[in-house]
Image (cartoon, rainbow, N blue to C red; front, side, top):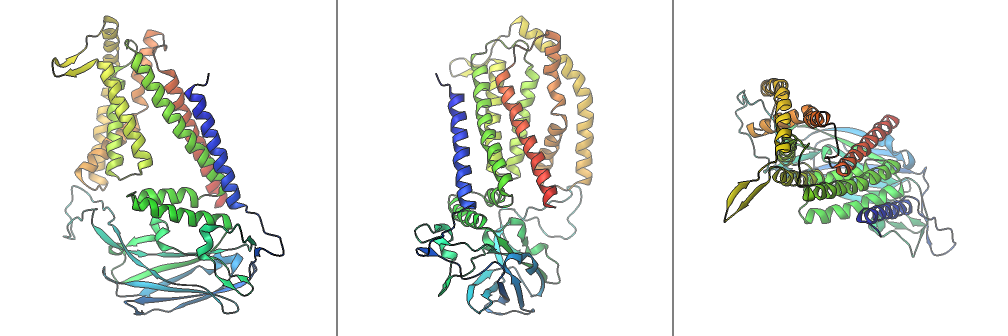
Length: 468
């Protein structure tokens, strides 16, 4: 008989295999080799392109030197160009870039007017809570919209010509293809809206002399990355219409586009099993506590600490507007810890009897005495260190508000002493000479999650060094 764990494991492996095969087909498509029925390229990878870039302000050409560069398609990185613009920009400025790319025989591949100023949620500023704002400017609400300048314009060019079958043309790149009498022209992709959020700089934070820098980057890209980028652009538009926050979309974009294929597959594997182990840990934790009436050997104060830690971290993530991929699991974990605390204290509430606390057995009271004894020793160490850290943070580190300072101080204390506060349970295990009272299945899954992310972090660091 199959158990739910086996079913979920099979489904997870099947999903990983399906996505891996889909990515393989995207990154390594079949080249059409027939004499007919094929859409052939009208260019070679070593052909040259000419890039023209002119800046416009309010519909008329702005001051500044137009950019005109010639590059080889498969060596697009050599076309990076820094341009300093002396534009009297204000928050209401309408500044666009007219970008044209031409082949060496004069055919226009791409011609677009791209907006260089957009309005997004204002950057949340930090300041020292004990000092006065010397500039006299009021602190803005982060809910207000502020103008942002595009500091880097990234253009991607397909670097390897490939013949497409007329019956199997990738639909996601069809709108980017232009044709000549000899075949299709080099495929260009440019979309500033879908660029990384750190390419956009809030105008208020730029130098006051109105010198704005823009980095023009023309980079070669494989067909697989081009198809993936176009697909994610469509998905991002749909998610944005559903109300997903920009930082969540930017995180999804970074996961798929800022890593190579092998690291992407590793991230996929780790993410799927992270969700699986998280679900199984929640399931086994709930199953253990649902049937457990005897809490002998389990540290009440450790349970209280876990609930408070989860609640504080969840509030901190919410205040920081962190990704929902992180905030939602933490919120679920907080609710489970609250439910475990209710089971531990045998708390009940009803209209007839009001609030009641269940009676604990003598063995459970003995456990509480040992727990209180060790926790008292631990507090002598923790409280002075936490107070010292909070005072240092208040005097020397900037914060967004007093509420933010309180949360960050508590979160830093949790991260610093989280491992130390597991010792009351270890102390009880030592005194009782037993660990049979612990939810081992849930703990095993949580350890597996930690090991998975540790291995993934090591792989990511190695990949970053190799890239450098």
